[in-house]
Amino acid sequence: MIVPMKKVTLLALKSEQDSALVALRSLGVMQIEQLRVGASDSAQQLKEEFDSGSRIVGELDKLFKENDGEVPAAGKRCSGAEAIESAGALLDKRDQLSGELNALSQRLKALEVWGEFDRPMLDELREKGIYVHLCAGSERQLREAEELPGVECRVIRQDSARIYFAAVSLEEQEPGTLPEIRLSAEDDPAELRSRIQERGREVGVINGRLKELFASLPAAKKRLRKLHAEWEFTTVHDSLDAHGEVVTLTGFVPEPELETLRAAARTNGWGLLVADPGPDDQVPTLLRESKFAKLISPLFQFLGISPGYHELDVSAAVLVFFTIFYGMIIGDAGYGLLFLAGTLFAMWKFRGRPAAQLPCRMMLVLSIAAIVWGVLTSNYFGTSPLPGLKIFTDPAVKDANVQAFCFILAIAQLSLGRIWQAFRDRNFRNIGKNIGWMLILWGNFFLTLKLIVWPGDFPVYMYWLYGIGLLLVIACDVNWKNMADVFQFPFNIIGSFVDVLSYIRLFAVGMAGYYIAFSFNGMASDIWKSSPWFLVFGILVAVIGHAMNLGLCILSVLVHGVRLNTLEFSNHVGLSWSGSNFKPFKNNTKSEEN
Image 1 (cartoon, one colour):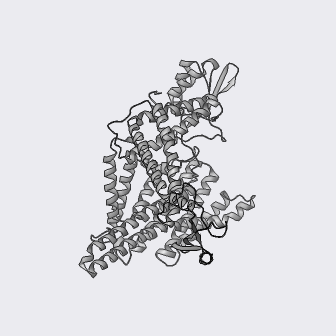
Image 2 (cartoon, helix red, strand yellow):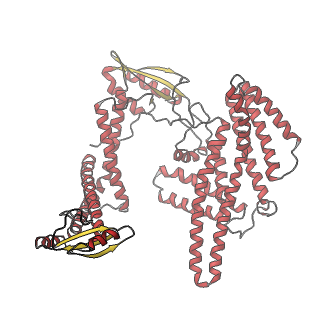
Image 3 (cartoon, rainbow, N blue to C red):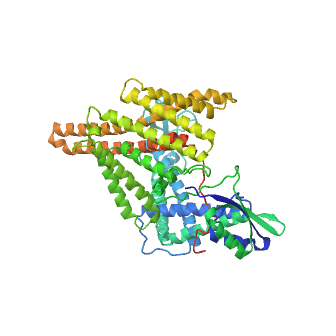
């Protein structure tokens, strides 16, 4: 359920504003309505320091993970601030050296076309009257150079665009006579290689010193949390409105936490103005879900969506239908077993991390759904070694039955959305509108069955469903004073049919996954049958094919399984996913560290 919110204005004495904010932060029950971000120099400075520290700690943490999380025995332990400062200086120096390395490597690569040569020797020869010109040009330019008196040319390398050659003469040529590439004093391959090796050694030394700071990485992260808390506190402080000797702060508080705030107000001598949020207020959303419905929250977090405060919490319905969609799209008990094994391993690997347990439990449910559907349809890595449910495995009827099941899911989910919206509105006109659309959806359901699944004559009751539904929608939904609404009405009718028809994607995507797996199995079998010596190659083809198919299945879940819930179903339940999560002003760090 979506927790009801109250809009609260807190009043405190200006002389006690800092202590009031500290006490309010310790409660952690109020989200500030309008934050004045960067309103003061101190807030901007803290934000810059936090952003810089986040970049530095992120780089250090990345290097730590690349080092398999090993802390050197000679690790350097220091405070978080010192660790961030030291790591920042080292990273800046490394970036500088990396830039120099890149420039030197590019210059050396540009000189590789000339092969190996001694740059100082070219200067010595020039002093002795022997001029060696390194040139690059077309065949015509090479011929012109060869025709010059006293010039000897030797081709060094040739590619599709240019010919690289050396022109030797006992007299210095006029500028522009030869297509000469002018070399600087630093264009010495040996010297460039030496400098590249030197910079590489310096980068290695810096990486070693960065690794010594791994021991201080927890302190650096703690310092970051403190910086963020200080920045947030300063930002909230800047958001206070002064009224003489009184300051006010407005925000949103969950209704169940209101008594906690009132008790703190009595203790600290604050004043509170409590009201219901207005229609124009941007009220945050706080979901209080059952253990069952909470399983879908990792998906919402991954997608970055949340229902609006005035919308419905459809978590339980999305979980049920998304689980079924996932099972049908993956559609393979073998793949489901792989997901299950990976999930169980992740649960064991991250057993000490509470944040990882909920996503793992969600994947556990989804993996079981894929296994169940694979067993029902007798699909194990694109093969059918075991009998499944006859209605889903009999070649004569299986396709039609799976298609019918897709449309049953469509009418069940979309009807649920309309019923849900009707109960929420509790208005005669809105109830009539939603009942009308639900009857049209049922008409669409029988129409798709007769057009696609079991072709035949349309039943009489389908016309009654359309007739009554259209009358209710025309009477209760169409705004006849708005011509745009009137012209949009026929397209809405077509759209409702498309919404039902859209669920056929579950059948199509699942069938595509099966035939891709089946085809790769056939390819692998043909390779092995051609010669027993090709067994390993055949197995490799099967493994690569199934890996590709597995990736496509996961992508299909994100594209199709998510879409049916966040678009088709959401449209019929009146859900725009326009909400923002409740983020109270609270102390996220338990200890302070400099």
